[in-house]
Image 1 (cartoon, one colour):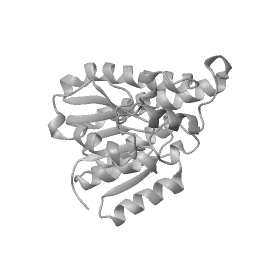
Image 2: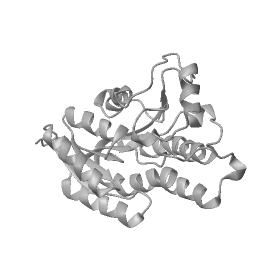
Image 3: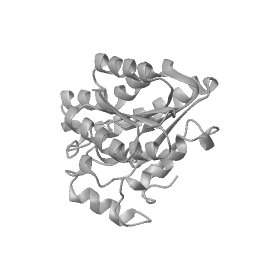
Length: 246
């Protein structure tokens, strides 16, 4: 166990979130695994503790304001908040319909989790940051590319990009940087139902053609949580093997 600063990772029960939580722990941070699925979240925290990481599980549904308030209370009790990775999102099985065929309930559900969720978590946790801090919002390169039959998902991740810039402006004077990572199609549990057509699109158009793995993103996430990124804020970095280039 450590007495290092605290990093909260939402949606850290599996996949990319778990990989980023593990790297934060390896870098000496205490880690909060914030996860809506209690069984999955506790198992992830237990796994990290078995690897020598000071990990704490807190159940959190980022769509539920009361649940987010509970997360903030747990963070206050743990103390020493330094970093937040807003990773929790709905991505599994969300594609396939053109924009005019998406029903309102599905649209609202994605916007509530993917766009309002990061804002709600940052809103609840920002009072607990110390004199410096790091916020990393997980967007998607789908919002940069304009992937078809994903309008609601793209809109929600585009909102995350805009939110990142707004928060960077408002939190800069407090020494808190806010940046966004825009991953490409990453092979993990959350993308298991993505149609083969999209996998083929990425494979054909990446500069680096091999499939993207969660570990391909953790190094940059670690940098954005580090002291070395202290003068970098309001930026969106696409990590997708060159699928999009800006």
